[in-house]
Picture 1 (cartoon, rainbow, N blue to C red):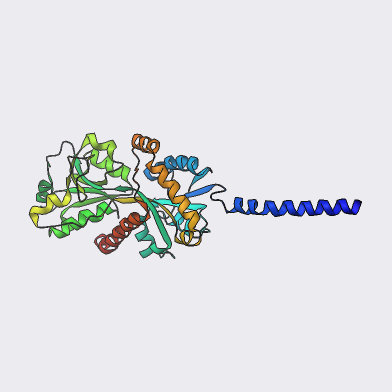
Picture 2: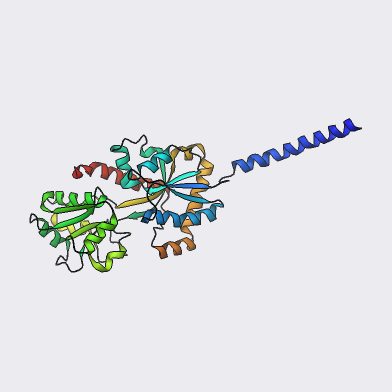
Length: 330
């Protein structure tokens, strides 16, 4: 009788394990089943950092797991991007940064072991545009005034973030107008904050700044032109650069100030297509939700859903232009 009971119990246990096995496997395969880390390859507190931290709370609620932003600064976003590249492409580590302009330097200057093909740019959530501005009390009223002053050697001083898209766009405009770069006194800064301060304080005659994020100085400056194909509805007083240059027979390639994007490993999309699609779909639901749109608008954060295909096109176009015209910085 005891043998019969033991045999029956063992058989019952085996049957129970057999029933549990699919459920356990299903739980292990479910995505996400644990916290996701967002690698932020820059210092805390900047515009991009604030934007992704705002986003992460909404993503965590949608995905049902913690979404933790971890700053990994250094090397002008290279250190954190390299760290992310070396992580397992399982969807539990993602990256948020402006791939352009930074990845051009990673790949072509710093010898990164990766290329753009190693990543999927899930969503270019914010595409910032360059603005040319002058101090509010300046006598400069238009791009015509700027160009006339540029033709006089030494008359104008200009502030830019060194090596930025704005830096390149300014020098490229001068080149296309056959104005020597040496005609202006160019003052370069390491970030947007000191660049804006110099312009706002009248320490320079004009400046090129990322428009998104520069709202804090708009009461103290006059907008001259925006580097964009069309006018930005938020800045109706900034004329599109090529519209202003049309009378000179010059057309400027449109180089975006920066492209802030969520990024995943290309291998993640290839090896775990179901997980990848689940992440993309959840992210899209967040961005397109009325709650997120309202909160992002209040915080002045980018809130566009472009999706992987359009986002990759934007990144590659800017990468090509940055690569082609970075010679102007030499």
